[in-house]
Image (tube, rainbow, N blue to C red):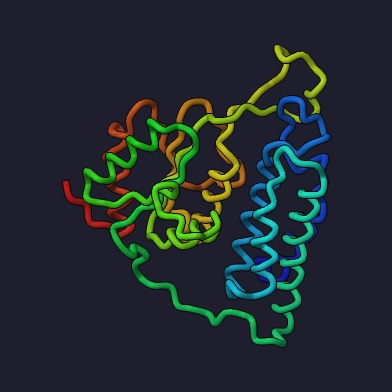
Length: 271
């Protein structure tokens, strides 16, 4: 089994392998001049970098500041400079963590905490969603009906916080639903110059949904994250072994299975 230092150093090597040519999906007329939507590999790397740094170092540490700076760089539609800033900050944060794990000169490592027996902190459930408003609304309706409170980020007050600060503030829950819906069309870089009718396309969820998916898997554990997927959306290959449930119109056909998962997580259901 890999040690934490080995995992961090493997992530550093993985991060350094990304270039402006391979970090994103080729969509539309970008063709290498501007960044496209995150590739699954780059998106998962960002999730893992944030998760492992936040696991060991406090939020006000230099490494976490670099993580935040890296994650706030909007690479889609921009040139190489934004990507290079994002990559540099994330890799630097991992290198700081590697050094600190080997020799914590400044006492920055978090003290180990015992895991609480019940992670269901309240009756709140986080709902991660893309552009499918009907599915999001239906999940909110269902959760209200069984006595739970859905947390949907855009419905919460900003209070002057950045998106990441707002997300972290409201992510203190015991369970999360991830709504994977076919919001974007993508194809590989190798297909850029072939006719549109010959391209093999995939339907993908929004990059922010994949990012938050990985965040909650890392924070809550696989048994406290339920993915509801719709249509022909591609499921993340690096996030297998999780609870996936297919939905078409309404979540009601999956109601029994969903309630069973919530009860297993410690939630009290009122019908």
